[in-house]
Image (cartoon, rainbow, N blue to C red; front, side, top):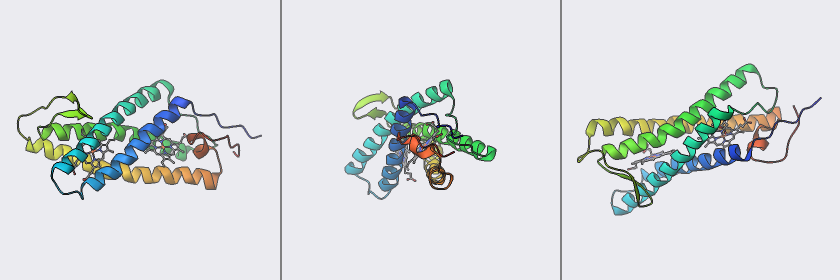
Length: 185
Ligand code: HEM
Ligand code: HEM
């Protein structure tokens, strides 16, 4: 007998896609920023990156609170135990990275003796009067290194979603897209 996969609630979907699109956009924007020469235009672009990053941090915190309350969703198919364990480990890493990316970015800015504001609204005051070289190096390496690790993890995440859809033919991908149930289990 086939049992329909449990649906994901609106809040789970809303948090997945608000954090998800924010993170994907910030990764692409952040790597593109590297290619922009320094100057006032770049400073303005970095401000946009920082503002969106802080907003993503707020959504990511809401998501952590939601996951702590609800746990992870039950699998959408009869997944093997290793697959289930792997999925949880990857999801925990993705959630941790969505917190550590903006936190390391905030630390990076503060070590550069800059305050953090969200679209002009001052939110976090500056920490130092002058750039703190050691802290800046640590925070920058963390931010850049995590960006690479997160990109690799996301490639795996999307590949796993496609494997569930095309090979296992279960509802894992359709339910995160908020589409109709697929019951092939
Ligand atoms: C094209 C982009 C993406 C696709 C197709 C996708 C697909 C999926 C799928 C199929 C699930 C499994 C839901 C289930 O358990 O049935 C999932 C869950 C999850 N995804 Fe994604 N995802 C994408 C982007 C992202 C991004 C950018 C992040 C975070 C940086 C992310 C983080 C998570 C996490 C933490 C979960 C566990 C459940 C939750 O907390 O919502 N995903 N995703
Ligand atoms: C989920 C949130 C975030 C993601 C995914 C993200 C991603 C990235 C990426 C991919 C880069 C380029 C890394 C490289 O050059 O190797 C970058 C650079 C940077 N990020 Fe973020 N970031 C996030 C949040 C933040 C926040 C909240 C701040 C500060 C408040 C911040 C500040 C910076 C700064 C200052 C740079 C360097 C820009 C430059 O001068 O080229 N980021 N970020």
